[in-house]
Length: 129
Image (cartoon, rainbow, N blue to C red; front, top):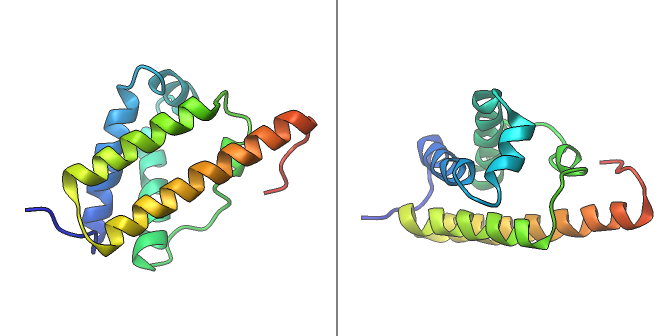
């Protein structure tokens, strides 16, 4: 039976399951694996902290999430695939208010990151945050 995201172990299940899909995806795997290389444990830990902060209101993430993504070689189709895999992972494991909050936040994050990446490309500028 599916349950809501209520504990750090739930966040870890979400993050681990999602990034397993990313690492095996035909469109996204090469981008993520090239950037992250052998630093996956460190990246996953950062993602646990990010989603723990966002979804559980337990402040363990400190940083600027956009900056590391600013110069990635991605476009709308990459964000659509990322979002599709995220939502698929949510649907496989969770249901409830916080799971829906995760879906909403992932959608908003994908929209914002895409907008900012495109803006910086079009203006040949570097992001401040």
